[in-house]
Image 1 (cartoon, helix red, strand yellow):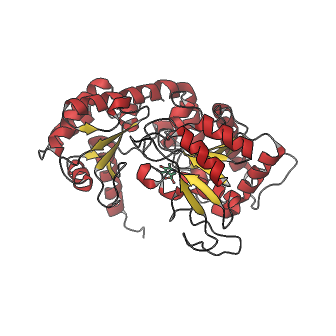
Image 2 (spheres, rainbow, N blue to C red):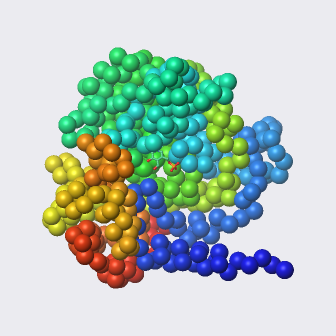
Image 3 (cartoon, rainbow, N blue to C red):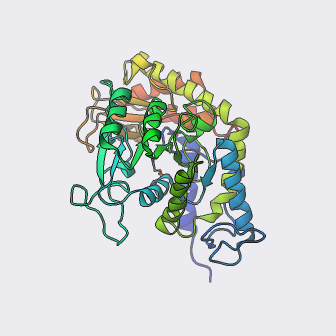
Amino acid sequence: MAVEISDVLEIVERQNRWRGQETINLIASENVQSPAVKQVECNDFMGRYAEGHPNTSDTDNRYYEGTRYIDEIESMATREFIKLAGCEQADVRPISGNAANTAVALALLRGGDSVIVNSIATGGHISHAPIGVVGRRIQTRGQSLIPGKDNSISLHYWPTTPDGYHLDTEKCVALVDQVRPKLVMLGKSLFLFPEPVQEIAACCRGLGIPVLFDGAHVLGLILGGQFQNPFSEGAHFINASTHKTFPGPQRGVILGNLKSDEELKWWRSIDRGVMPGSSSSHHLHTLPGLVIALREVRAHGAAYVKQTIANAKALGRALKDEGVQVEAEEFGFTESHQLAVNVSNFGPGKDIARSLADNDIILNYNMLPGDTDARNPSGLRIGVQEMTRYGMKEGEMGELASLIKAVISGGSAQEEVNRLRSRFTEVLFV
Ligand SMILES: Cc1ncc(COP(=O)(O)O)c(C=O)c1O
């Protein structure tokens, strides 16, 4: 007798209808996949094993048999990533941005080393933090490093300018020179403006320090040519998720632009950091979708991210006109897909995010520069990349701003939210 699945199907159906058709999705780390990506996601690659690297006609690089087509699709994804990013190396095996950061930390850091990162309070990601993979990397003998204890990783934080949304270039370069870290990490989760990669990388390259740009959020913006290009500014690595502004399946990637013998040693260590360090098999069923997403980004990525950034700026202006305090106004609010909004005049960020969700506007509460309690932040983070993919433009950003204002002022707007969303259900830029 077949097992009962109707309750499971019903949950899936409800999720598809609610988040796929009814809600306005503004979580900055998410996106929606194209019908073509979804079409190839349910396949026999799911559950198969393929540790190592694709076999070639004269080398056997796998620890398992049966990988003929896995080899083809993994090689395709690697080749197409290298071509699109214009870099030298790509490792498509990390299953997420966090796993990509884990692999690099395992490869390049040892107990007692120093790293410079963005702090969480200024937008950095948890994986860069004392409790994340960079702060707590596992040593070779299997000990877990306790932050602040002997032989732990020493984390130093990039100094910012007084507005809190930009790095202070001069002070950052001086910090590199003073600390001489074993790795520097740029890029963050609350990511409004480009970072001074060029100046920091010039200093690091002179000192033989690897420069990792965490482009988890902005990979799509970079590949669409609408944000800084960390490689042309001197970064050695870009780590990223493949499901945020890059609208592919949930995975991660490590891109490298390494040329000298010394730099190529880093890549060989990272290879071991990926497997066995942070993965064995790697969710192979999402590889065909990754290749399709790479082709979509190649064909339509520039137009998509141009509209995304225009929408973020338009939403910033419209919210400001509604009397909502949008951060970084003096810098035009944003140069990315994100906005930071201070809602302390209306209530705690957490409560405001919840009431927006109750009205089908989905986003997350967030610490803003100056906040000290991660559980009681004053801000919201908004990302417009998903609704842009559904076709919203500057005009809809005005409508959205007035719905957000209505809810955060204590009103309700669910019906209007659902009506607005019902006009935008087809995925574009594919
Ligand atoms: C800067 C940054 N790095 C890494 C990650 C982790 O990526 P993933 O969720 O793909 O593991 C995130 C997640 O949002 C991020 O913002």
